[in-house]
Length: 181
Image (cartoon, rainbow, N blue to C red; front, side):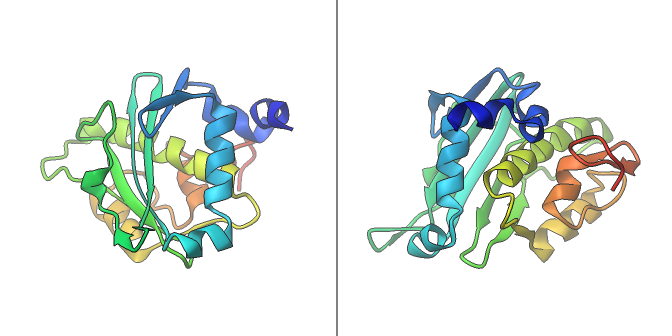
């Protein structure tokens, strides 16, 4: 089954530009990262951990993902507890609530139009990964995420779903299997 994770057509957009996956600062095969996220996004696991906090970023063809429980042994987690090997202005931070609501934000007050492709790339790789990890129970975007995407005009059309983030290119929406939605 693990072999099928990498070779399945729906995972090709995720892995095609990424040569290395760092999960909580450790290099892991894509299949292990995907399996870990699949397990974490199970409803019972989400509830037990009070959701999850994350940071995500790209350094060329290396995808960095830090992922910790919101609650662990009665203690609350914080984004500053997550350390990636590479962080820059394009690093995304967010959380997944127990209700499967996803918040993805970034901190860059001086964003330029030339920054948009880099932001889109990180958003899309993260969205593709999360969709692959939980295809039957997709996460929903919270209003903060959609408002930020609208305000900063990261995408030419404001995405309302995780699939739209994963599949929005130029001015049209295409599915991850290249058919128009």
